[in-house]
Length: 221
Image (cartoon, rainbow, N blue to C red; front, side, top):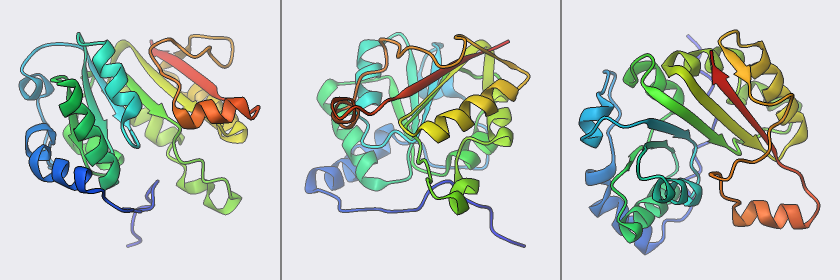
């Protein structure tokens, strides 16, 4: 039996002392261990509020900023890389956020095993790995089967928001979303960046160099 293709390479990178301490002291409080069982998000967050999933939050800057600006929502972040987990934990602590939780595991398995159908109000996937080489395109996260599974976890009128700075990946993502029968585009093609998505330092440098970013926001019918 061949192993499942993963959409990421586990590049742990160097943990700073602050990130290591955060993982040791804060992950037990804000982390959710992976389990092959359904979890109750309302029980975990201690309230009934809109739940937003972010897949691949990187170093967590956007996650923390969005959660801080929208305390009425709860945010579940998935990331496999330890430095990013430690970075977001430090931002949770600095901003005193109570509406963020983290799962450090493969997003495909988290969605398959841990999340109830129609439990999410929104899904954010900002700048997923573009896997630019043609032979690696099969590793791209945004594929029809995965999008279909994501949509099954969205409430009616919930949204999925994906952003990328790779034009060919943007075209691919748009086609996949357009072909998903449960989704409807909020724009004719690509959407304007909504105010809630902050511009990262990396993105801002790219914009200054003339690079483009493509946002796609679709609603579940």
